[in-house]
Image (cartoon, rainbow, N blue to C red; front, side, top):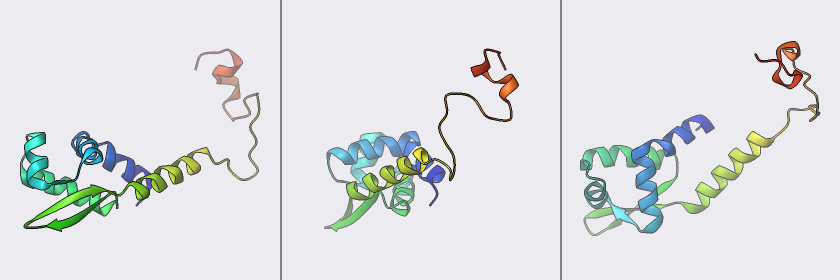
Length: 113
């Protein structure tokens, strides 16, 4: 899964709320639905997306599946994204002056674009 899809998956407001709850405790779909005041089917759909991302893991406990955060996976995911975001292109250098093709219009030349 690419970074954009992954970020979208975890920043969708309901999924983000689910993740915050799962950081505190493991929960089944029914408990999450009650805590979030949404339907169990809606929670199930969100959990499917989070499972596909590898961010949560379900474990059968009695008749229910309880979900937990895959903390190591989440850490690796964010570390990898940070590495890709901070990587410089091959041969690229950081300079104090603007060297892009839009330099005459660039804010670093003191003009407003």
